[in-house]
Each structure stands twice: as structure tokens, then as C-alpha cells.
Length: 316
Image (cartoon, rainbow, N blue to C red; front, top):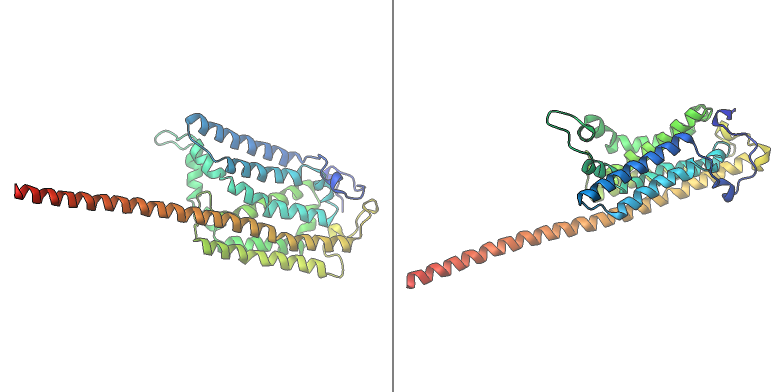
């Protein structure tokens, strides 16, 4: 298969981590990542100038999320990912199961809603369009578990075990489209689960955990299927260049091991985030209850004092 459209030669030297992390930017992802960071930074600065606060933790999380995208798309990992199944699987797992979690924990939609100016009466600006999208039927559909979980699963099986993968890997545009798809699937899958930004679906915390675990076993099964295969299953990676010094079946087994092991990482990250959110929610609820009890106590005390005052008035 010709990968010349990707702007690289087939004769890459054997893969090492040092070589993999060398700078080799994909222009599309470089521009998208820099634009994302710039817009987020603009939002934070706008809030600060207005005297509003914005969590440093959220900012750090968003930046880490974008940097993980750059790590797999703007280094030689992207070049090796075109010819080595194992490196491609690292790209896939990070951009679909790690980057979206950190980006979502950065609450970019909440930041946009707070930073964008309100349009004049009867007019629609970016903020109003964003709100309309959030409340749209389209958003309700694509963030519903009945859509996100099957999509999350199908993105593995329907892609790798059909000719679609080889077709997409045949061109630079196809490869970019596939990586954008992986990232988007991760966003819509984890958005209702992590639930920092406003969205159409906000299930309880136990339900969110069930949604998380509904998708993860299929990643593990996919990895096991690759590890147990007795011959290369994906045409693109069947005949690796001699310069790479790898065996196609061994590389596929390694890719399966990566897919199998990686499914644990987002599970742990999301569980930790959910437990913190759950604890914070309980604390806020407790404070609201305490405030309500204090108000009720004050009213009872005022009523009792009024009663005593009326008794004194009668005695007088």
C-alpha cells in the first residue's frame, strides 16, 4: 500500500522511543491544537480581567489533554504509526481514551459560555449558537448511552476488521479523518460520564460508572482477539519494511497487548474523577442542608422570642 500521501518514506529505521518522540508535525493537528490552546487561554484571561476566577486545575487538565494529542500527531510516532500496528495502537488509545478525558475535565464548554459575550436582544452570537447546540435534539442523541456505547465499540470492530481501515490508511486525508473520529468518539463517550460541562444527559454517579464499564470490556476483548490471531489481520501492516526489523504477527500481538492493557487506564482516571465529583456534590448538598436548617432555626427562634414578647406585653 502506498503511503506517499502521508509525506514520508517507507524506509524508517527500527523504532525506538527517542526516534518516536522526534518532532514531525501533522499540519492539521498542529494548527488545531495551537488554536484550541489559544482560544482556551483567551477565555481564561477574559474571565480574570473581569474579576472572575477559573480553576487552575481545569486549565492544567485541558493543556495536558491537548499536549497528548500533539504527542501522538506531531511527532515521529505519527510516521511510525503509518507502518507499525503497535505504534498506531498507541496513537489510537491515547487520542480516543486519554486526550478526551483531560480535555473534558478542563470544562472548555463552561469556559466558553462564561467568556463569550451575550449578543444584543434579538441577535444570535457565538454564545447563543453554542447554547442552542447544547439544547438541540442532535446533541441529545449523540450523547445518549444508547448511541455512545455502540459507537465506542463499533469504532474498534467495524474499523479494524473491515476494509475501511485500509482505505483510510491509504491517504493522508483518510488518516487524519480517522484520528479526528477517534478523538470525537472519545469526547461523546466520556462527556456524559465525567459531566463537568453542561450537557443533555446527566445520570447519577452510579449510572455513570455503569456506562463507563459497559464499554471497556469490549476494548479488552478486541486486544485479546489481536493477540490470539495466528496471522496478520490488517492488510496495511501485513508487509512491514525490512528497515523496521519487525515481524508483522509479533507487531500485531504487541498492538493487541496495548489495546488490552490500555483499557484499564481511562477506567481508573474516570473513576477517580467521578469519586472526587461525587464527594464534592455530597459536600455541597450538606452545606445547602445546613444553611436551610440554620434559616429554619432562626425562624423558630424569632417566633419563640415574639411569643415571649407577647406574654410580657400581656403581663404589663
